[in-house]
Amino acid sequence: MKKLNVAIIGQGRSGRDIHAKTFIGKVQDKYNIAAVCDYIPERCEPSRNETGAEVYTDYKKMLKQKNIDLVINASFSNEHVRTTHDILDADLDVITDKPLARYANEVDGLIEKARKTGRFFTVFQQSRFAPYFLKVRGLLNSGVLGRIVLIKIAFNGFARRWDWQTLQDMYAGSLLNTGPHPLDQALQLFGDADPQVFCLMDKAVSFGDAEDHVQLILHKKGHPSIELEISSCCPYPLYTYQVYGTQGGLTGNTTHIDWKYFKPEEAPVQKLIREPMPNLAYCGETLKWYEEKWDVPPEESDLFSTINSRYYNHIYDVLVNGAKLQITPGQVRRQIAVIEEAHRQNPLPKKKK
Image (tube, rainbow, N blue to C red; front, side, top):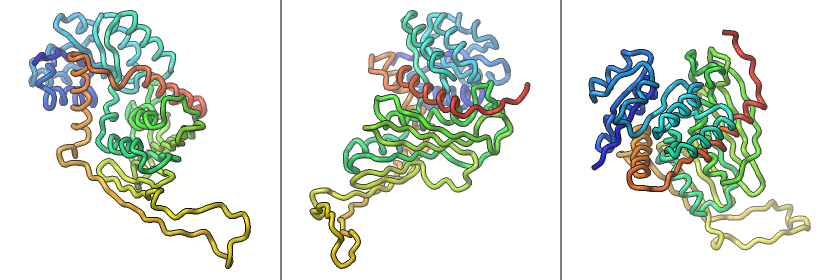
């Protein structure tokens, strides 16, 4: 089997703990780490010791290495756009970590650069392959819940942060840090149209100046309404997904989902009554409900390991076997446009450097 030689920019939480460990421990039959780069040299040592990769502190020098097939851009969030341009200019294929950008026009520039250079370019949105999301999407597409009226998504918890990912000038905050995962899922469920956006943000428990509490609503006629919460001040997270449909509903988290529904052909026949109900009665009927449940398979219980390996197996299939890319820059551009509008509606004061 042909192996792809990858170079990774950044060996921090993402570059090392997500990308490098996936290449080393999960998809080592398809990928080889040829080079790693970090401005803190000692961060590169684990990957070099395990793979023999070349080590750099300057990514532009690394891009000149001859045997690179694919570059993983896991630099700081506010460096993603500039670094991706440099990689494409070096005539190399690239996967950029989330968030891809802060503004939609930055994404337009990257899409145009990839078109001009003819290089492969996409974004690391691996949560598209999450088992719970695939199950929810399958149930919604099946029609068993009827027309979908409302989808609630909550990526909540209670956690105080004081690192660089709480700073606006680093392209940080909950919507850019965590948001690309549930927002990518939400837009897949919303449909192809660009949604109307309403958003409320707050900076509650973090020590930077970026938001850590987000309430986002996506809506448009002919599409389900989607309510997305991303909060760092929720000590009682009750669900990841809740769905309201005309024939039933769904609730669940990343490991367990319950849903119930009725079959319209089995429901009592009703008709609208304009006159007062007889005997002061209130509308009431007995529906035959069907209840089902899903638990994540044991072999997929390690969520991040599952979605990371699925993502890179898919990328390999695209680059080597010509499969169709599932996560396109155009799809991510729509996500960034939503995030940009959310920030426009909620300007937060910035800390002085």
